[in-house]
Length: 391
Image (cartoon, rainbow, N blue to C red; front, side):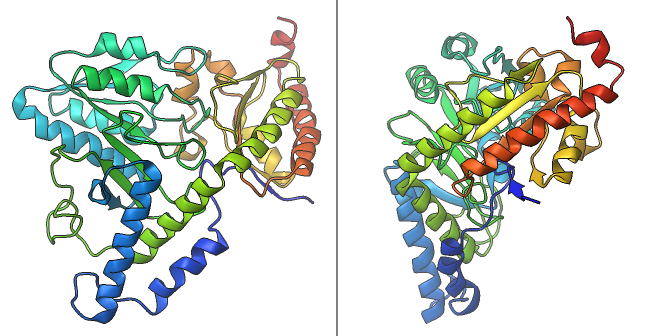
């Protein structure tokens, strides 16, 4: 049976090239970067070289604007809490975000609401795109920060980041973007795109789990994340994850170097899959077709449950994910799909497939062979399908 991994938005396989770059810092160069002896200084040099490379690849002015973290969720938490708690004393107690952000943002906003902050959750409409004018209209005198994700983790829609950033810059409001899904698949330049803070992680681009970063534009004051040692310019104490940082650098460098060829190839495969799946009756693509990541296909099939589809896909060797929150023990459909205006019964029948450079046209052909059969089987088993198929 063919085995296809189609959940690269959840995590990716560690690249052999990245692992090779990491290995010396797991085995030989194990010194603490804060030490003065040789292997400590060698480790420190590796961290600072990675910081310089990453700053360049993100379009940052200075390596000192890159702060290493444990991943995207930590970076998101730090960006919002660190800025908001800093600006609270100045009366800035308003946050703007969207209704379909990652839970690392939404749950952080909920936590800040308990501290007295007010949050405006912007609509994303049927196409899954935040309108820049909505951001502009929501900004107030007491707005501390705007946080809009670069690309949605479920439906892959790419937001007008440069436009939103320009509005925030003109109104002198800080702008953060969660670029966890976008990094490596779209061209990011924090200076040109008016980004003040940016989160990303390594494991979405064939790097290691447990290492990410927060870009903080020079001059922005933010509260410390972890107190203790002087690491990360006194902002985040703790001995650095040397191998992880080296792996993050290597993974981002490869992604940037290959972005044009890789994304064009992925778009062809993505569009072939979308066209084929849309031939299934009562199916729909979630979010804009044009403004979406090159490797993301998110579909709804009326009359079935997403979890049932996933289990059948697994039986056929296809690893994918659902818009439904099945892993959390909740039967609620995805908050992302509900934000698009989909009714519960439609949002329940969703699946997300996300690919990488190892995906082949034969893989897409196999998926297009398997999915229609599974959808038909599940619909034939469902008492609801008879009621909705002719609507």
